[in-house]
Amino acid sequence: LTASELAAVRADFPLLGRTVRGGKPLVYLDSAATSQKPNVVLEAEVEFYEQRNAAVHRGAHQLAEEATEAFESARAAVASFVGADDGEIVWTPGATAAINLVAYAFSNATAGRGGAAAERFRLEPGDEIVVTEAEHHANLVPWQELCARTGAVLRWFGVGDDGRVDLSDVDSVIGDRTRIVAFGHVSNVTGAVGPVAELVAAARRVGAYTVLDACQSVPHLPVDLPALGVDFAAFSAHKMLGPTGVGVLYARRELLEAMPPVTTGGSMVEVVTMEATTYAPPPQRFEAGTQMVAQAVGMGVAAQWLDELGMARVARHEQELAAELLRITEIPGVRVIGPTDTRDRLAVVSFVVDGVHAHDVSQVLDDRGIAVRVGHHCAQPLHRRFGVAATARASASVYTTVDEITAFREALTGVRAFFGAE
Ligand code: PMP
Image (cartoon, rainbow, N blue to C red):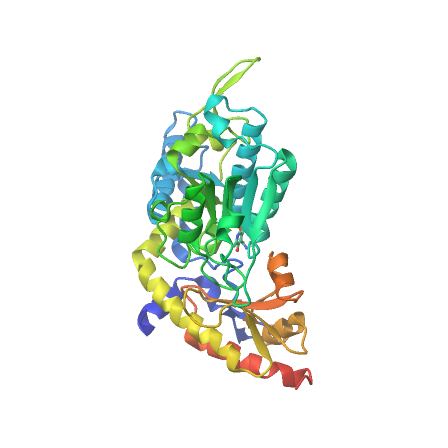
């Protein structure tokens, strides 16, 4: 992005213009937690409520038709953003809900729900589910719970000192008993791009399903889910310039066709009698209850906004930001968790400052208007792997500037002296 293009991008985000901590310009380096939203997204939500608000797929009145059309066009926009068909996209409240949906579908199939079509998702005691030590809790705890419900066994790939998933024992971890392999596309802690092609290939060799946590990739890279060859994928709108409260489960069409429903109730049924119910085809089968229509519309607009800017350009801009962020390794006493070269990693950098607690680091930065995240970032096993309870994390998005990262590095340079840790 040229300087004027970046200025135009930033002008689209009202929140980026505000000041914090007594008039300091906000330097927002917490986009991996949630991104800011451009005007077009905010306006799309307001426009929906002002002009089209109605429940979708119900009622024959004009508003219901317009709301349904807006909801389904948003689905098409999000689908095309990740190379999928509309029928492969299920609206969920977010990525966490999407991963839980998959886990509970396997669970229901194991309990005999869903008939013959769902047999393929049945798990037997001793079947194996494989994850990695780098997972966000959202792509770990649902699988632990699925194991507890079914008698399946959780196995995982460790992470090397370089922060990369260690696949050296791939053929012993993924084997005949493996039924599901669930892994992140990009770590929300280290920014490392995961070994998607290798894991998809290994899962295919044994006929296991793959589940991709695409939360941290879809907002920052061109992502074509069918081309990656994964069976399922999850991502949230709020990290890709869209609203909170909405996200997506992507699944190959034939899998959605065969999956038993999870949340049941209105809008996902065909025929209901007092004795029994038949279910609607996907994606409606997985969208029970009144949907988050305004948020879905906002997510569709966010996807289009990114599409128009061009994800290849977004990725190039953020590559430059990643290199700038990684220059904190030049500051004495600062240690980055994970890869420190720009190869196969994005602009998310977690770090510790020797002798200074992560919370104190973030407080010094916050005093200067610089917002970073602190804690375990919902990845306790990965932090334990590196022997730290907490890190501070700086993360960028399309609207982040090199100047902001320079300000962050300058502020960080003074932190150890401030706490007398030098
Ligand atoms: N996976 C990763 C890698 C994430 O960064 C996040 C959000 N921090 C999630 C899953 C969960 O997303 P959500 O909270 O939007 O459901």
